[in-house]
Image (cartoon, rainbow, N blue to C red; front, side, top):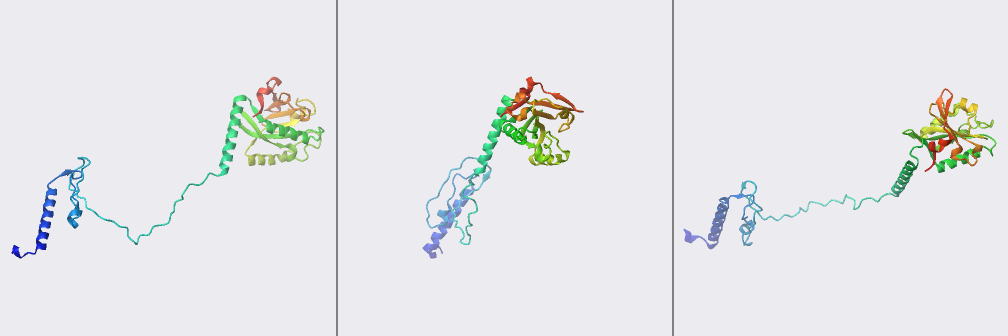
Amino acid sequence: MSSSLSPRRTAENMSFGFIAQVIQSARRQPAFGTCPRTLNWAWICGHGAGAVDCHRSSGPTGRTVQLFTCLAIVQASKATKTGVRKCRRKSGTRKSGSINIWSWFMNFSIARTIRHLFAPRHELSCSWLVWRKLMASLRQRGANSSRESGAFLLGYKAGGQARIVDFVLYDDLDPHCLESGIVRFDGRYFSELWAICKARKLTVVADVHVHPGGEQQSKSDRAHPMISRSGHLALIVPNFAKRAKRSTVGIYRYLGNKDWESVPKSKRKSFFHVGF
């Protein structure tokens, strides 16, 4: 019977027998993690692809398993198409406006810090730019020192201190308030003032008007405050705002019921700051 087998069939039987012995030998060798000798199936299934390839385990971890490694060749399917690129190659560039915003913010912060260092206790403050513009406007509306002029001072309040940042001239609201030579403001135009404050997100922190002579209040000033609210400040600039100095500006606080408190001349500089 055995003599009738062809040489090819005899070789196949020997190959299958060797495979069975190798598999049984591997099953009898328990290992922790990866087997210390991993069988290379390329040698068994191929046509003399090479010798058995062995790999060392990384360590005796995990539970006992039977693990084999089989060589496989993977190729992408021709039916799979590569999609188009969706991601941007680089991030966007910074807008030039951000530099301007940062510069404005830094300038504002520096000015505020300097003002806090040099004028920390002043109850009322104003920048040189706003103050000079205000004085020039009062002189212009005074028509060559022929009549009084005035303005509402706009700004914000915080921590018991007020900051002047803008103003609205009386005759920009009431065009007839200066015709008599003294200020006679019509209360019907206050609605326009409140609308301006709302639009600019500011509040009235004080008012100012000029006198032909000194900075003392007149009977009319005491009897008719521009803003009848306790704590409101009224400034009086003498000599039609010509060569106006901070020390010569009268400062008065309204207490209510037509009663006023005057800031002494010796304390005007510590009360009112003009600078940064």
